[in-house]
Amino acid sequence: MTRQYKEKDNKGVDIYCGPNGRGRAGKFVEPCLLLLLHEKPSHGYELIEKLAEFGFDGDSPDPGTVYRNLRKMEEAGLVKSSWMTEGPGPAKRLYEVTAPATDLLATWAIDVQKNIERLENFIKRYREYTTVLS
Image 1 (cartoon, rainbow, N blue to C red):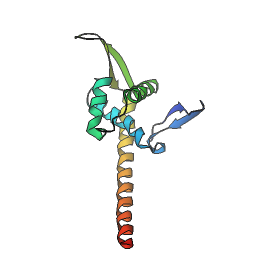
Image 2 (image 1 turned 90 degrees about the vertical axis):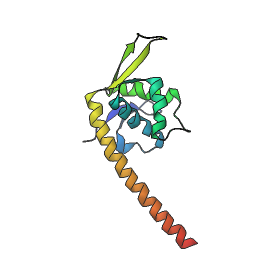
Image 3 (image 1 turned 180 degrees about the vertical axis):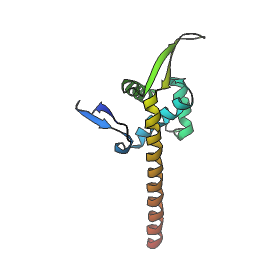
């Protein structure tokens, strides 16, 4: 089952999204955030730092992208947040996944595996093609 949720396109028209319909690499931020939050509730800044573990090191999403994704996922019921006021410094919003996010994360894992297979096939065929040209 592919979980889907509604968002707006650039003209404000409702569209439905799920892992199979989102092919851009930048959209990989969402499943990474869900996985990180599945492992441990975290605040936004910590999530931004941990995205490097998924290969976003030199190409880290900007904080605005991360917080927009978190807000969108919260509106969709995939994450919930609460304010952490204890400890030094300003209050921080703590994010954690909800039950629907666990289902979506499993769907993302299947989709990522399929994409790996497609990419490996592409590379294999590309290498065969370039060998023929040499």
